[in-house]
Amino acid sequence: MPLRISGIALVLWAALAAPMANAGYVETPDGQAFVDEMVRQHGFDRSKLEIWLSGAQRQSSIIEAISHPAEHTLEWAEYRRIFIKPARIEKGKAFLQAHAETFARAEQQLGVSRYIVAAIIGVETQYGEYAGNYRVLDALSTLTFDYPPRSAFFRKQLGEFFLMAREQGLDPTVLKGSYAGAMGFGQFIPSSYRDFAIDFDHDGRADIVNNPVDAIGSVANYFARHGWQAGAPVAEQVAGADYPQALFTDGLAPKLTVADYQAAGIVPKAGVSAETRARLMRLQAEEGQEDWLTYPNFYVITRYNHSQLYAMAVLALSQALAQTPDKARG
Image 1 (cartoon, one colour):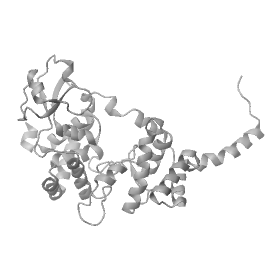
Image 2: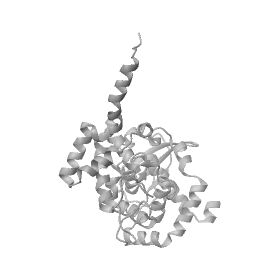
Image 3: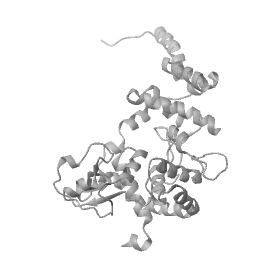
Image 4: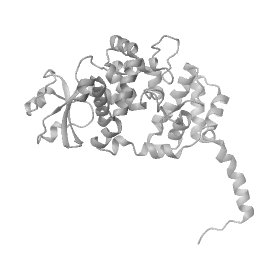
């Protein structure tokens, strides 16, 4: 039997419910605990934090997006088609040309390939064109207080976001980014912004949101700090075979050595030493299965986004960007 509510009762219920609906996250126990911590540990003004947090809006589309990331639902053939397109490649080459001096300086000072850096920015935001339409405050608040599976992680990011905004002199209520709260050309989450963003044009501020020079330097710095090896290979396709399952190790980190794979009949052509760490992976491509041997630099790419499909997209785009017009036609 359906519940029937009288008109008077409905009006009273609405009047009582309205303050809770408009109060925002700041009135919740978790919201108050967060404010208390930021005031106590980082000296924030309580009233400012409460105003900012009370204005944060829950975004249901964020919950939906983070629950079904493309990296976990697509095969390589489908994922590749998203990112390796002529338009993205042409925009990338134009971006490389427009910022040639900056890319050269990043290569020289930080030892990271310009094509990898450009590919990261290309995959993330199409060279700054699509940096995200969500308010970062809304995204991080939604995931902190309304997404239990990763609330601890995003609670830390929300705190890092307020610290970052204070350090950079930015208004936390207007910054926009991805559904996960990532910002700028290279889509840094707040902790990465604080840890790896650098002032590459020496104007006194590390601005990866609006400044492509700082963004290029910051992505290169991220890779350098995570162990990128200048001039070392990233991955290579190897002949497919019925390899023992033990060669396909769990996780993204390379656990075996090239020598282990050589013993199984895999012959690398990248000129790597037998002691080099490596990982074999199998992908479903357009024309069937492909086997790839990946090296430490591939693992570094996965530190940016913990997905082998993402790393493959970055590698493929970087190779396309590095092609000369003659090679591209061939």
